[in-house]
Image (cartoon, rainbow, N blue to C red):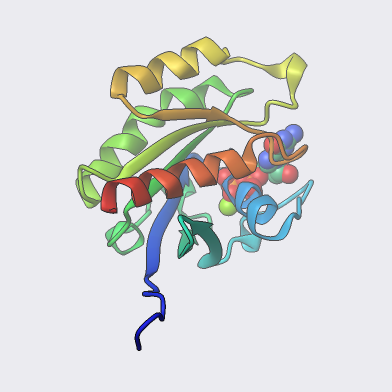
Length: 177
Ligand code: GDP
Ligand code: MG
């Protein structure tokens, strides 16, 4: 096969976690299908969606897992986390309680997956300007203290949604290559 290029495929499991109604399912819907559900219920949650990206001419498949609403009962199982190499830990910038719970989600993530899981803290719903309860600086400070990435997004108006997912995929790729 002289002259034929070596092709390598990568498959990364990435999990979405965070309190109920912070916008996890809509972030995935926006990223994978460019859709948004103004009044979504947990029923829109799919098990996972696979998105393909090219990095360095290599094909990367990101298998992004969404909950089916079980986080409402603090019942995200270890099977959900198993094999994850990336995580988006999401809060809602208009509900401080969801931000306060980030550390619990990080603890749960580290209990169930590898310590080296690439993590991005995501402050979602930046379109809700007048309802903001958590400043950008607070979000950034929390992420910096944990030495992890931070992005503010809006699934509604699409701000930084691509960036959030691409950040985690690129960093996983950088570590592995
Ligand atoms: P999940 O429980 O974390 O999966 O949250 P959902 O994706 O189901 O979203 C919960 C609610 O928040 C729904 O009514 C969404 O329409 C709404 N929502 C999600 N993302 C955004 C956003 O970026 N901005 C606004 N204004 N609402 C959002
Ligand atoms: Mg959901």
